[in-house]
Amino acid sequence: QVQLVESGGGLVQAGGSLRLSCAASGSISINTMGWYREAPGKQRELVARISSSGRTIYADSVKDRFTISRDNAKNTVYLQMSSLKPEDTAVYYCNRIFGGAPVGSWGQGTQVTVSS
Image (cartoon, rainbow, N blue to C red; front, side, top):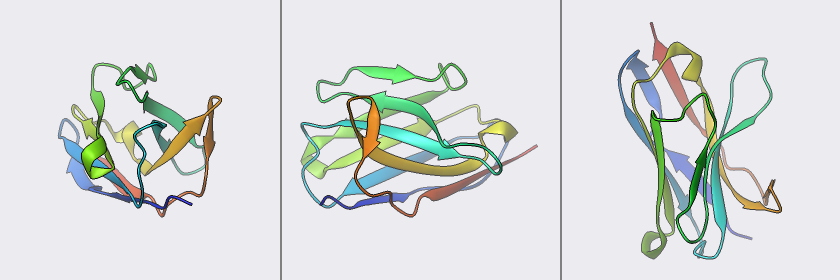
């Protein structure tokens, strides 16, 4: 079972940037990977995904502000977030995606807080 560890969150002012990392304990090169977020009182949602070939898809709410990327040599997936808004405040998680759904265990996530 591949373990995932998210990092890079923090407190940032609106308009700022953060780069999140998701480090896997094993190879994820053949996996589609996704970044999810869960805000207080809301369901966990998928914000970005990247296929094994590098194709990316974004939620409308983050399009043109977030960029997902991967480094298979490092078994790591990144989420570059810019022009952050208070509504981006959430715990961010990564996971493998199969058949359109997250699979495997969730990590502890990383908290992103955007102040206005």
